[in-house]
Image 1: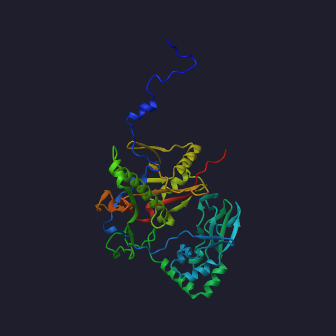
Image 2: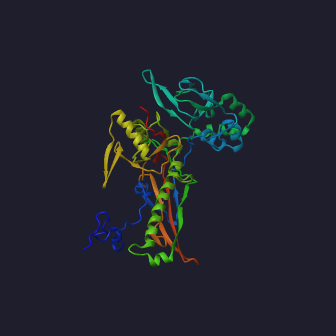
Image 3: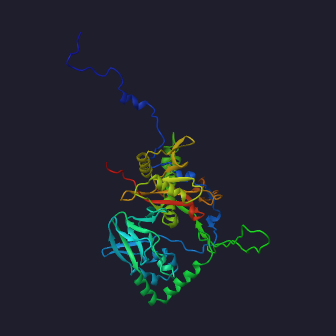
Length: 466
């Protein structure tokens, strides 16, 4: 009998697992996608049917132009005010572009350091000021002496507009002091007077503004509805009516589209156990919904960050988002229903809460646990941008048509509808045997009244060094 030498390894005693796997059935998942987010904005917006692809927002007539932020142009020669943005001063709203260009050329830039006083309370207003970069504190006198912080001016905000609108010489009602290094542009009173003397159009426009400013209006600038109250007897009651805006905002549905290609051979031979067309379409629809939410936040034409009224934009008191900032954001409107913020901004806010020893609210919504502030949930939204200087924005909104809030717009019942306001249309098969499908999502958003949406801008999200 022959024996196997001890130094020679015997062959396998059983079927190897890698070979056995050739006969096994593999358990597979559906195609997964990392880019899917919670999409809280799409989930929380009340969606309104926009028949005919258009939605009209009717409002009361506004008689008083509201201040808007200024824009600036930076170049090798320094910084200049963008002429068209000077309409952000109510007294200059509607002025001819050529005059605005002349006026913009008379602004001069200067750099200031922390602690520099730009204007003193009670002093005559001798120049119009615009903050191009930096943070300027607004400081007033408290009731019993001392000082009180009234707010801050940051990029694009301005002061001294009374110099444009007043007949008499106005005075500063607050002190302006630089809190950080800042670049400020100033329009001296002498330069304004010189241009007014040379431009009959500017003189006439400012005079017309002063006359229009005397027209009765409510605190929102809407044409007054005359009322009487607190009387007795039989006095003559005022006649009145509610005037409407003659040029209401018309909002058309926007679209996000793509063409899905699928080779017919793939659909014929590789359709088990999963439908290839269905899985392809599912992933494409997820991507479209992600793009839809991004557009609702960021689109320059209709995105919420761009639609927000300038009067509803505030800056952080100190840089990072604090409880004080969130309270200010809440105080700007009635019935705030939700906050929307980038996850890093939420983390920065909670760091400030921890530092102060205060605790956010615990809010349970279905199977989700959320944090909130003053009973208002804070929803994460990664579509809100984070800038290169590590700042972001926080949105606060009231929602719903019945509450004059923010609403989403869509149209259901589309041909080939796959989901509400999203349809799939078969476009035929090419000579290369590729089946083509047009996938379209129609949507938009409307802010029914300006105070329905507020934005806390430029909040710093980077953690401070310790």
